[in-house]
Image 1 (cartoon, rainbow, N blue to C red):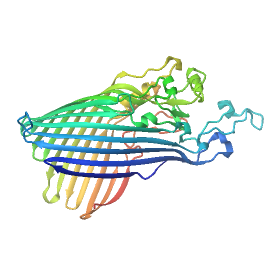
Image 2: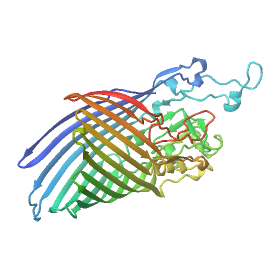
Image 3: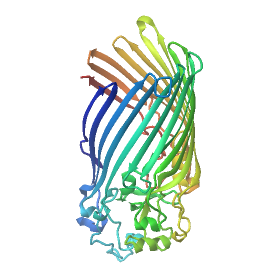
Image 4: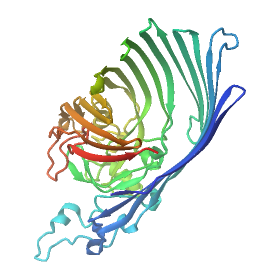
Length: 510
């Protein structure tokens, strides 16, 4: 179970103006630390001498120090242009560090205990028959870090950006932006991205807008350095939940390279959008936007890679060559896919004034999106054995089907004197969970979720709230694959599968 230590942050800043130029300088430092412990478990290789509680199995820590300088100025007439221009430029330096720390050696080491071949009555020990003399290694149902798996990753990123907002006419605006970034720890350390956007008012109530841009996201330090042993359960290639020792390894490690991995490259995006804004009445507004987003070299976690021949195949040979058990499972991050996402966003709101009965703000939101795989980037080495795919059907499903293709939100916010009532009804479209074995794919139908919050202002700064999330206690479909050892049958729903929850809250605004 994770134990989160207090998160610390410190912000220092100043802003002002000089000769008509506005400036804003800030520095922020933040750190969080997460430790893992486990109770009511054991390391079977220590037999009856094993601890049943581990206070320290793994620790993760992330730090960030970011300094920004923003400068802006509005020109009534920009040089060489006869119309207003707003200029904004800035510098940013961001230092990041991700560290992990090993835990109790008895949580991951191999103890002296082994299974005897025969029981006291002379019959064959079923545990020996199923596993041989070696019990499963490590604290069960837990995440552990060994000394050789500790990580210490750092990155320093320097950025320079410039933005111009042009106003050729009262009805037409154009935005131009560019950003140059330098990463000190990845191959593509010099990177430039840009954006262009424009808005034109066709009438006093109707406008069109559009945008095009590129972007870059360097691999996170966690994706680069996260290395753990996960001694819980996992789905095998047949879609059955089984006990498994999974090792998540560095993508640039020698073992990962032997399994088809390599140093992670940055994700690059291109996006195109086109939309309308409409205000048919003073208290009514509607926006409609279409978008297409291409992501190249999208990073994903590989399938659970393990030898399909009980450790006697090609992958078992590779694991043994690197000092691991032949039956260990492996995964790591890789540049898996080039993807394309198409979508539509519709947002509308209207406010009705009921006089002494207050006013209600009605809202409608609708999203449709669809992600497809344009190409696969990762290939599986032939020597691993039949049936093993580095990035297969399950990993693809996580991108294209695990989230709803549609989401609809209907809301009403009623304010009357010191009361505020907020009602939100959300429809989540159906989702699918894909396994390596396609026969185990499952579909979970759409659901309507209702949230309610009622607040009363006791006096100027003190507010009392009573509310509920999913107040009608809607649950996901129980359509998962039944497992003999139990486990969730809800798949991966887009809302909490535990049903409704009620709360009270007292808030004081300083």
